[in-house]
Image (cartoon, rainbow, N blue to C red; front, top):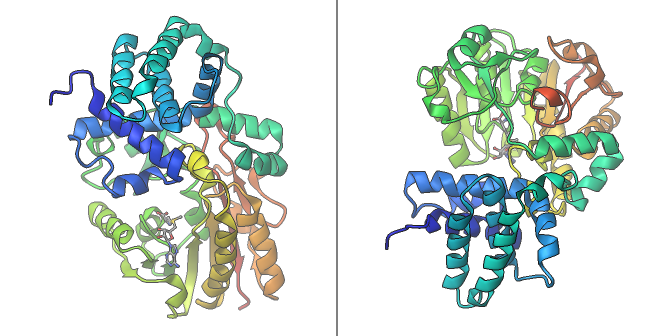
Amino acid sequence: MADQDGRAPRKAALDLLQGVTAEGRLLPELMAAGALSALPPEDRARAQRLAIETLRAIDRADRLLKPYLQRNPPLIVRNVLRLGVVEIVGGAAPHGVVNAMVGIVGQGKRTAQFKGLVNAVLRKVAADPAAWDKLPAPRLPGWLRQPLVAAWGRPAVETMEAVQAVAPPLDLTPKADPQAVAAAVGGIVLPTGSVRLASAGQVTALPGYDSGDWWVQDAAAALPVRLLAPKSGEKVLDLCAAPGGKTMQMAAAEASVTAIDLSEARMARVSANLARTGLTAEVIVADAMAFDRGGFDAVLLDAPCSATGTMRRHPDLPVAKDGSEFGALIAQQEVMIDHALSLLRPGGRLVFCTCSLLPDEGEVQIDEALARHPGLTVDRAALDVPGVDPAWRTEEGGLRLRPDYWADQGGMDGFYMACLTTPA
Ligand SMILES: C[S@@+](CC[C@H](N)C(=O)[O-])C[C@H]1O[C@@H](n2cnc3c(N)ncnc32)[C@H](O)[C@@H]1O
């Protein structure tokens, strides 16, 4: 059947939105399970973009819809309205959006009765385009907002929310010369040496992709390896390596890298990334906790975590999650730190990092590790990295990065990192 009103990608975006809002699943998980596989590539990209834009604006879409809804419609109908709102305020032709959305609800036995509602509400939204700009500032959901306000204060969280509301820039880590990469892709070199482009377009079409001159990595995510400062010939271990951004940084420094990850599928991406960039590392699919070959000069533990620091790149996360899984991750990080320390030679160093905004996955882990291991010290000198603002340093000796830093230049992911040294 011909897809004259662009219904197929919109319906696929609705399915993604349902998976996130009704089932608490993340977009990569839904896509890996084949949510978009029936679509041609162009429609797939459009469906994904629509779902992401809607998730990024979900609280504002709900606020805009509120005056038009006397009763709470079923979630699937609300999701159709959210998609319609985001498309209309994004500049899509309103009649096309309304027709497609009415068509989608009309197809479902249980939703067909809401055709009139969807038609009326989206027409009202289209009739008042200025209403969007009059909405209050965007807000994160309460389950995440509360701990963040407790940790960083209300003004910082409000800036994080403003950063969260816009699509993030694209950051690249150059294999060698940042200036040359910036010139080739039309980006700027950030103070820490990453290259930033305001908007991505198709990453694989950028100059230097095929020749492996750079890889995609947020500027904040590039800093843990700068703290670790691997030297040529050093034996270094990357305990949670996939998809390999930090493995490549360490390999580019000519360290002898062993990269481990539990996930075979994700590890295949490490191998592909190494092949593209012409870098080498020993690649092992294994549970880091079962790996017992010791004697490393340095270990990088980029531990599994809440990933709350990456929510501006993954706006599905604050919607899909509710924080209930985070306790188990925090407990896992603690045992992984102890195991990572056991794999170091005497006088070796461990960089622990998480892409989290929660102190329990950062500052608190380091305080507790120091209490558990007499003789273990924090290497504060490791934080002397070009471009790192002294204000980002924390009391216990780590580095706290937040999305509200560099807000006027497009922000950065939230991250925590610290370098620990074992007794010689
Ligand atoms: C934050 S990501 C790592 C990102 C990576 N360091 C990079 O820079 O590209 C965490 C990784 O830990 C892996 N992981 C989780 N539990 C693990 C375990 N017990 N052993 C090894 N890897 C594990 C996950 O598969 C995931 O790829």
